[in-house]
Length: 179
Image (cartoon, rainbow, N blue to C red; front, side, top):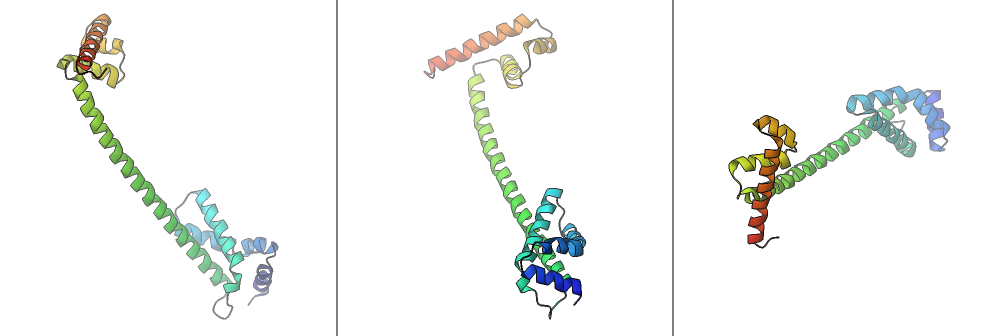
């Protein structure tokens, strides 16, 4: 065993903070390369994994057995398994996010289907032309000026059609006692 490794082990056993600086100085490049090889993450995630690895080495130096391995190989193994654990954590998180996304998509599509059915029922008393006008004005948010230009009519005609359509819808709702 090399002298600098023995000094590092002693400092780590004594929980001396100098050990962290010495660990990073001696094995920082090794630890970083192992983590980068194992993970494809952003800088913040990489730094978090690096910090967790150094903390694991700090807390678990008692598990190091010089008869089984060199300190360098033990540090490399800790880094590799921390990176693998971190990768598994990321995969689980992505899967949760995807399942949440699917769930919200399903809820929105169900809601959209119900809203679409309600809208169809609401627009039922209108002619096809009035329904198209309502969808453009209220659904798509187009201005009356834009619609008038598309339809080659005056803007006042659009306002009249919208007003008459609202009256038809109001009359239908009143007759059903919903308003």
